[in-house]
Amino acid sequence: MPSEYTLPSPCDSRLHSPFNHGEIALSVSKTFGRTGGRIPIDIILISSDYVLFYTHEATLLAASNNSFRNLLPLPNQGDPLDKVAFVPEIPSPELEIMLYSIHNVPKEDFLVHLDIEAVMKAVDGLSEYGIPPSECITPSSHLYQDLLSCAPLYPFEVYALAAQYGMVSLAATASTHTLVLDLAQLSESLLQRMGAVYLLLLYQLHMERTKTLMKLLGGELGIHNPTPRCGFVGQRRLRRKWSMAVVSLVFLIKPNTTISLIREKIWEHTSDVMCPDCIRLRDYQLDKVVSEWSMTSRTINLR
Image 1 (cartoon, rainbow, N blue to C red):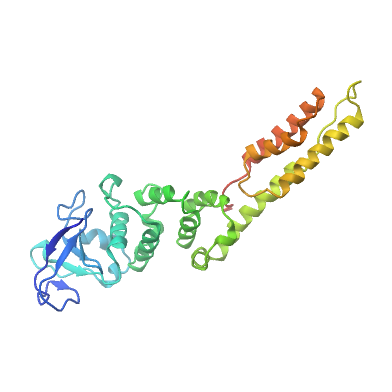
Image 2 (image 1 turned 60 degrees about the vertical axis):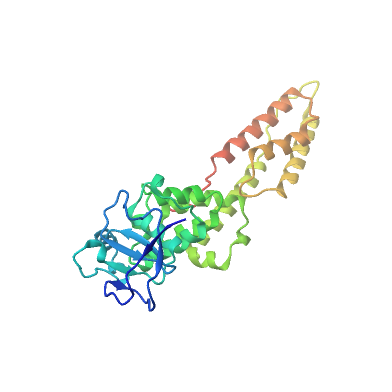
């Protein structure tokens, strides 16, 4: 649990907040406590749920293009920690993540479990407080890496967030993880976040992969020279069995169809083929399909 701290009476002019009764006991952030960790401290922010965050005013101002939503700078009262500002719109989980991003606190010093909903709201908060998310959430930042780790579990959320704020590389990486999902599962709020352009890119990725696999499976099998054991009639039998395997796959094809499923269905329908030459033709074509499918792009096309 956060430690406790008692602010002066609300009539104290140092407190920029709407308090109107008695002394108020506040919690203190685990990550942004009084010791300051690896960042200098000269100001206290108070979240909407009354948690204290010790932070650095100059860093906030340097990151923000609207003076931290016109909250800063505060007048200097002598003692640096006399500067206290209330942030009425932002609850503590979101403010914690915002400061984590602004200060790029090392992950080992960030003591809060990341919740994807809180992260999304925190990134919105960065934008509202004049801090372009794409400028502080970069591949070298810790929050960027956290979002990458969230992408396998929350692919649509991470993709939509990256799309909304123009974090191109993050959107591309997250798009790979969306292949396991149906685009019909996208909620209205996520659709609004990603916008028409990124929705189209995602749709094209899913559709192109599906069409590509169907085209690969429809490729022609080769033929081998007739032998006493297997002539052209026998080879037509192989093509018929291959076609049956493809038909069985058509109803299962998805943007994330696995190589193991492709092999399984082809082998299932051609397992009774005995001609060594036909088996070589089958295996050559199957390996070709698998190889080209494995090289098919798994990310949105940003060109």
